Amino acid sequence: MTSGQETHRRTSGTQPLPTRALTREAGRARQLLAAGEWRPGAADAEVAAAVLARLTAPLPSRRGAAARRAAAVDRDRRLQRVLRTALHHLDAGAVSPPAAALLAAVARALLPWHAHPNPPAAAAAPRYPAGPAATEAGEALLPELVALFTALVSASPPGTFPLTPPAVPWQVSYAGPFRRHGRPAPGVWTAETVGCPGCGGTVGPWTVACDWRRITLGCACGAVTHKHGLAFSEVWLLLPDG
Image: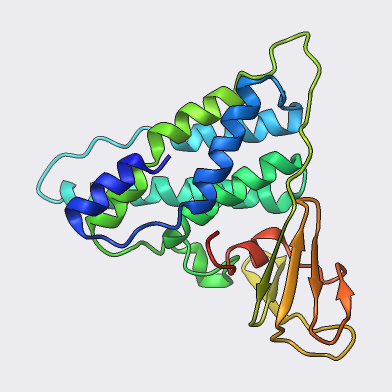
């Protein structure tokens, strides 16, 4: 998954994108699809089609002296839209666990195009990484992502029944706050720091466990809860890439 990115990183010196999770989840998805162990249901297929449309969106034709800068913005916007589409469907909670894991990994890899998870207000404005090297590293991921999401879209031909493989849960330790964001009205955002229901602590250390249906937070005081209201992205994008 990262071959194109690795080549570009060696030649340009750019910082690597966080692709460890993407490499793992993309490889697993390909194996499951090839073995017929994952035949996406309607929700997964719909989301895969939405992400694929963003991945393959053509860039506008640009001419003239100012075309170079405008074209660079167009390229970054395409990557940002892939990221935002993945996050939207991840947090909507309608897809299967393997689809959620893949969407989260795509979002993690494209994190430089999203300054903060679920950012409030002005974050609707583009936040682009600096310089063409980062854009080229992001674009190096697109061909294999296009192939993978094309396979997802076509993996359930008419007359077949959906088949979902079991989730692969994970657990990790994390020290720091989690912020729960809300959007009660257009242009209005709220943010709240999650506290432990036992001791009221907000910085952990937490034991974070996830089965791609819900996230459980375990506090050092011994309290364990999944009633924190955090979206997947509000946890996943803050954790170390792994």
